[in-house]
Length: 635
Image 1 (tube, rainbow, N blue to C red):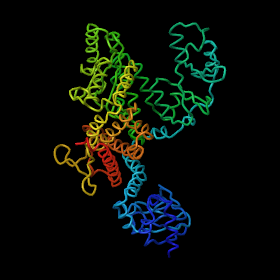
Image 2: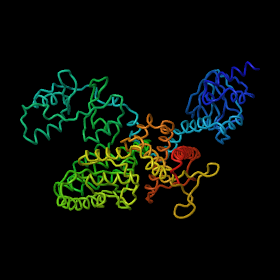
Image 3: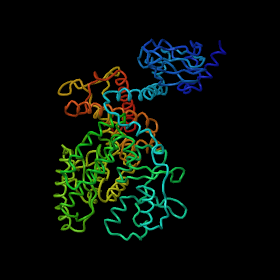
Image 4: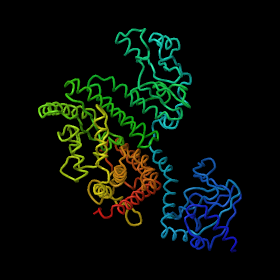
């Protein structure tokens, strides 16, 4: 018997989470271990059947995990082999199996008692963390599928847009020409090959630019340029390109962001093809690129406002095609940026050129590219420092009229005014660069609350129009102030842990007790905001310039201890909560109800309830670490 136990312990030392245990603990949990053999084809656990009193550790063999009550409807959701576990949901207060587990090879398992492992979880944080994370990662994707299986009346290929590589769709044959040819010869090549673009290459056959039919129309014909002049004088720069293995979704974002319709495809450092807006439209049947182009072509607000309202339809289409909220936010942010940019262009045409360079910035969810349905006007202006009080008076007079006009036009385009007046039309949010630097410096160094920027969302600012260098210079100044500012970080930590997840005793939901939202959960305040606030703090600690929560997490993985440990859990939790909120808002819009951030837990499926509780648990765990980190400063 001793030799068998010795063999079991030796095996478990290589299997997570048991590899974290010392020999004494391993000996104690394997005192009652047994071993079972399951021939190929044996159903080890039945869907909706009891999980039993044991967790099985596969010693040798393999199993498949399926859902469905017959072979005809069977869906395989997982495969497990040597060293992986079966039945650990029993540790998470689940009495029934949610799936079938079937041996696909002759399989041998060690059987460990559930009550013994449950006791171990109470005393060993590493073991407890392993099983909590395992549940979240294993079941999150299933929860997404279940969430998105509701109400999908459209089928326009957005899911394929997100999973199909550019190489699969783009034109394989790409026409190139030497960069020193004439415009006439470039046009002749395009005409003879019946193509809408030609890539110019240098003497080493490396791409240096691209000429499109639009370049010929706008830079040659419209301006009466000499056809015998050099083609490189009209080629588009910078030379944008996409990697062959990127998805169509990434190509779409680049096209919208840079207002281009052609992107050369690069594979192994060589141009291997080209993808166009037309390719994307044909592939998916519709495209926000077209909307972006229509926005660009508008000459007045009367033409722009109806286009802006089409954003809501695009959100619905993206949601129905299984895109997650973070990616929907990225697409919508690019389109909204175009709307804002066009409004600002129209304002300049009406009021004249600004007296000094300026940068229009957005912040909050808009700055983080995490909005979906229209959000408030959270924006501001940074303008170049003036040389005298008289000049500053003239500049302020211009921008007062300018920002008032812009606010009115954005409202016509569906952007409601900010209820707390965090908009550029507020004189305190339309300031020269030196004032912005001083304001941030006062808040960070002295924690002054009399400044307009006493809200953390101002750190999420992002430039969308004008002289971006003004925003970059401000960001550099902020990073300089942030060095070793532990008191300020403690202040931010207080804000980040103020909203605790709504979990009560035995992980039950804590809902609103009265009022309009009685018996409902506030997903934004209690779920999404705490993640955003904590990740923002971590980014400020490390002077990370990214403002998107997703990008901040990615940038912090190798730089911040807490994020390194919880990066995937935070990201998955945020995406699930945002998608759940977006799905709920979509339903409210269909019912013509007011859009809010509240959900009724009774309308959630069991899987959604389980997943949202695990997401809340992740938030709570990270908040506990934050409290410990700043325990002397958190009230």
